[in-house]
Image 1: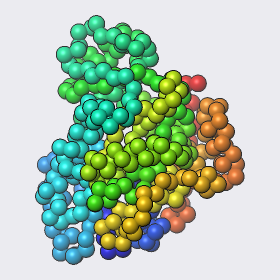
Image 2 (image 1 turned 90 degrees about the vertical axis):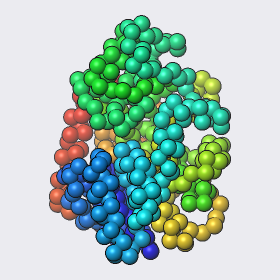
Image 3 (image 1 turned 180 degrees about the horizontal axis):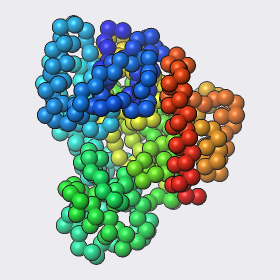
Image 4 (image 1 turned 135 degrees about the vertical axis):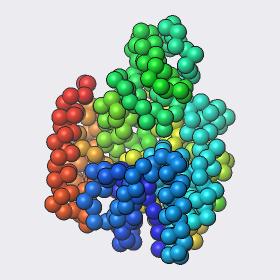
Length: 408
């Protein structure tokens, strides 16, 4: 391991990546947090945490990162920079030129990141490559007129196009994703958002029928020569039911689809990008297609589900820049169903109680009964009394949370 990795953020995505490094190389990772670390990394023995208050915003971000860069340069240890979530990814890409003096930056340029992450521009790119998408309409502040309606009927999905700006806002009625059921509700939400300072646009989409188990997560690593080295598809089983967490997966089982794999490999390699990407898809039984909602040029929050099933994302990243990544064809992950494991963010008891009855959840329950499941957080080599208490409290809170928000 010639390259070390410096992480920005302290969420579950970062802990999963740090765990991958520890499992593969036996090395502690360093993470930079903007405030007290989140539960995922708190009391961990496999990370060194440095708190720099406010580093998740400019101008402090670039000022502090250049200071850290000077220290990295003095240590003469090649360092790869990885951030959690949209905000850190955008900050790294925005300052890619300055940061590249000190760090390896496995991200696309800022303009391309915005183009791929922004739903309106991504929609045009997806159409060019014949990637199926739900029927879509863009809404802006000019639409606050009180006479908005859906051409596809209801329900529809409404989501902000600028996730960074939206994440920094909060007001009564603020949600990550809205499920709209009437003209009245649509107009109310749009007015509420713009009245409370939102300046971006919204995407309104036809809601594809089917519960959480119709959803898929597709993640890939593209090397610095723009070749996809591994792609893995996950079958979502149940999502966070709360207003701020909707869309976050709580249980994922592997899936395998060569047609989808090849289609997205061709798409990604033609874009000439590098680094991690993930897509949210949903199977539409009306026309037998997998429709893509969005593309994120980063790892997802629950990316460890793939590591649980044999894909160590960090080992691909490090080997790529160490020069030890073998020149093998792209790995289509999860082909062998006998090796599948279910990734959980909740206890098996809660999964059994709230997962909707269908073939996918039944298969997952069989795997769980056979002991073929795991968590990002629960790592034997990093288990201690404080981590156990954090885990116990989180599960107690999840039980109350699902009871409050879950709708059958």
